[in-house]
Image 1 (cartoon, rainbow, N blue to C red):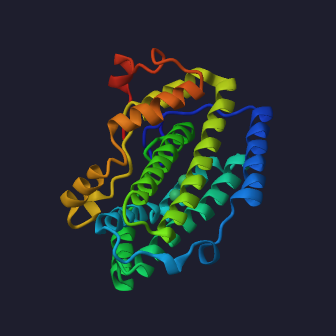
Image 2 (cartoon, rainbow, N blue to C red):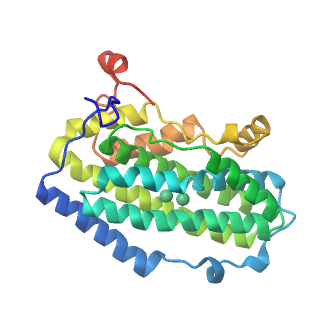
Length: 282
Ligand SMILES: [Fe+2]
Ligand SMILES: [Fe+2]
């Protein structure tokens, strides 16, 4: 099948009205809980006077990489919303999600500057480099994008959480540790919403969900920002040395828990030879 621009894409099933309603209720529950328990204020809730200027510079390099990923927000939001505009639950979710993600990039950028690890000029240059590139949807249909986002959020949660744990074993930085704990709680909540969305889709078309999960999860890669950073080889090596995320962590802490949560077997997740030939991976 082709879209308006003549590109091939895999159609995803539309939810019947009663399940669409469930998606909306899921969003309302997510939103109400966020308003009551999860909101945080960049200026008031982070002890900015306790930034550690002497923290190991590798941490600032990693934070810069994370900030760059969060800076793609205009692409993340503008490209997904048109695909879900008929779904109130998901469209409103993405609006709220965009607000939370915008806070992440602001707070991470603030830490880089307030801690003295980066200058305002450096950050402006980083933003220019990020905005010069465009991020495109890694999946060609909205159901595939739920699967992708679910995996991405859990992977991001693990990155932030593990980084927080690494800093706790170093010289400490109460500002960054507090920031990372707020951000990781947000990422975990995002993961939960996408996972529960898939549960709703599975009531309607379990096979379609498994097909999309196979496409996403058997080929998963974090958004690539390495080629954007001048000294990419060094930074990749630094990130790897902190052991925040690798294929083993992915398998153990993302892949297996996700399929278990969704009640899918590893047998069902096997990509068939036919799929390997016919599916166009991003
Ligand atoms: Fe985020
Ligand atoms: Fe997130």
